[in-house]
Length: 141
Image 1 (cartoon, one colour):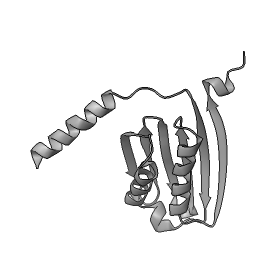
Image 2: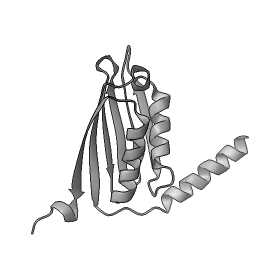
Image 3: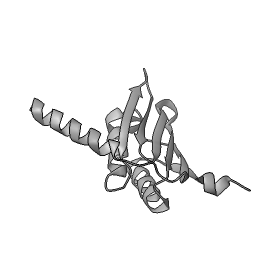
């Protein structure tokens, strides 16, 4: 068991060392969820599972993740991606969550990631802002 874990860790580290930086241009989604399910808003497992599944089958590689549960309610967390990040901050007492998805993986993959997150979160109302960001997008000469 231990040797298998070491082998997987070494394989993952080699894979990450061979990655190259992405384009400096990307898309940034700012998502606000209103009227959310309190259990989901307080569940680190739910957000971790939702975020990880949202980037599976994409070019976005998870470099690091961290989630923190507040007492008595709410949480914050993120996935650090090879293409940027996904983050969440919840206020369960207000049934509200703020989520960011920023990626240089392209519109199609980033949009697919957002659609998965939106489909998984129980909510009554949603506001989504989509921003184009990056060197080529915003650098005026």
